[in-house]
Length: 501
Image 1 (cartoon, rainbow, N blue to C red):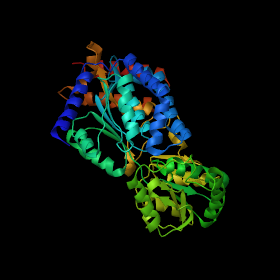
Image 2 (cartoon, helix red, strand yellow; image 1 turned 120 degrees about the horizontal axis):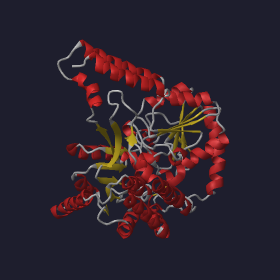
Image 3 (tube, rainbow, N blue to C red; image 1 turned 90 degrees about the vertical axis):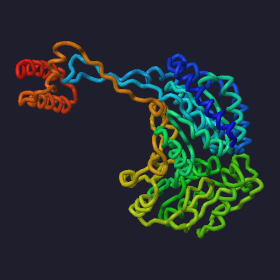
Image 4 (cartoon, one colour; image 1 turned 30 degrees about the horizontal axis):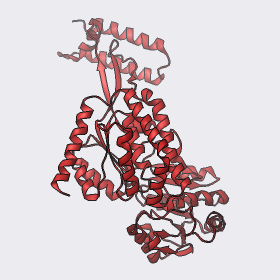
């Protein structure tokens, strides 16, 4: 990367920061209009977007429409409707030490935000976080993934046409260019990617102490109990694994089950996969492709080195970026398939003889982005949830929790930090600023003057009485206003009598 290009990035960030400092993006009306413009952009260019997604990943129209465009439009609808409500200050209840004062929490934009998109859902994972940042009043620079080049170029072309060009920019850059972009001072960074990418972003953010949200991934486990409904469990697991040809951060990475459960699962799986794809899977237009030759070779190598037994699929074609949906049994924890997130259409099945063995297996590895449990016996589901940790949980299905309105989406540990979606997106890109406005009144000062020297026993007793009032009011849940009034009056009298002068 030349010094000219580096300077261009610096100038871009400086320009966007000047825009933010004018206050242009703060009015609710401006934010809502920009979100409406983005909605218009998606609706008016849906065919062009679908074409770009097809060129990048050969995505079927249904998957591209439902899992990218419709999610974006639905999210935009909620943010447009609730932007004003989300931005309202939170007023705090009366404080006994500050009866005449007011306190509230302002929701303020961080400033200039960098959004690093991902290639597996290139439009969704660039625009979904960006719209949250816009709703919160920030200026935004979007850097789509260079691996999905057609989608990235299209966003770079469309966004300036529909969005405010001073406040919202798109940068097209390769890996080295992204590093130079990260070297600038940002007020917030949002990144979707792998664990190694997340570490690099944190290192880049550290010199400026820039806060980050990292949406990463990991090996999301799927426990299948013998009590599961296998007709449904198999369909839902296979859908979650093979949608987008396994290139989904919350796809079930591997299955944990007993040999009896495995037998029941495979019986249904063979029927379902033939119903879905027929005999010629590679010729089926409902199946996407791997994003590039490097990832295709990586997945092919996993199939060639696994010590497990392939019981379905297994064929590859590097020229066509094809990895057949594959199921592998008799896989152990040290198998090549179990070293890193697979991020492809390969489903290993690991034998466990009890739910406790499954729990121990999960807890012995980095915390996953998602956890899946299939059981009619709810005690099994509850036990798995209570004894493990993950970014999110979905019981008796896979991936569905991502689209459930009102649930935050995010990881923990190696699978990321922070969360977003809906109001959580607004909160992620908002600084919650505490504000206390004190009164100059005589009573207000009298109640507070016990803090001043000289310190006396009476002043100490006063504070202890107030703190006991706090405890009482908290215990009652704030339901009894008469107690609050009595405490306030009592505190005032106590302050006037106990240490007057």
